Amino acid sequence: MNLLLLALSLGLAGAFPLEDDKGCQPHSRPWQVHLHGGGVSCSGALINQWWIVTSFVCAPTSFQTVASLGEHDVTAQEGTEQHITVADVIRHSPYRSPLHSLTMVRLASPARFNQYVKPIPLPSSCPRPGEICSVSGWGSTIPNQYEPFQRLKCITVPIVDDMTCMNTFPEYIYWSLGMVCAGQSNTDNCLNDGGSVMVCNGQLQGVQWFRHGCSNPADPSVYTKLCLYNNWINNVMDRYTPFQTTVIPTTKTT
Image (cartoon, rainbow, N blue to C red):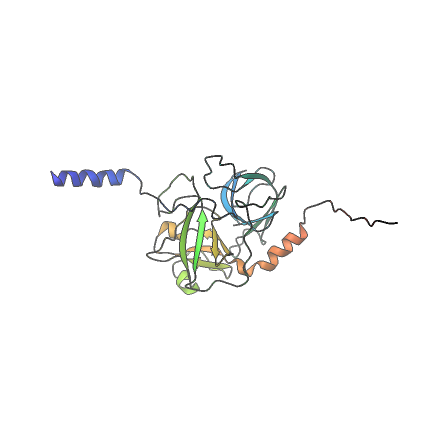
């Protein structure tokens, strides 16, 4: 009888997906953005009232993609959301290059900051191997398993040195100095959401590039090394400054 019960329990375990319980504390990542519509469904990071950073493959479509801020459960209206249309989309050039994976997204109207919507600072230095970081996004955190995304997920990962990461690459993927890797054996290094956001010590350090840890849980996942792109990011924001009416103060005369 015990053997029969064991067989049934194993059969049921194989019939149902594993539990994915890496949910973030609701609204603990107020910089997280859900980009959807216009052929994309990805994450990004809000860096000021107008601009979002995401990966190359997550580049949205101007005036077709919506950026949802203040999200936690994307299947429900929680009263905290701001849904803003995407205006400008600037990919890092050269396009289709294996050396870069970065897109800047300008909102059609500015985000309103509150406890649910806040920007994340750009990095002041690069992450070091062994540094512990947080990755957030919508999707499964169980390797090789699809799960319809609903609530924001969070995983904790260590930064991995470049050589260790390169040794896990398949032959068809080239290493780039614009990459940083995080996650290793016995850590949660899979979050199956394009553009997942990596934050280290309160600063934006990466957006997901390759989800290697979702194919092999022993491999690190790859992120864009944002500490190398501060100048490019700031130059884009300077060149594409949104038009705003400036109020000139008047001087009272007597």
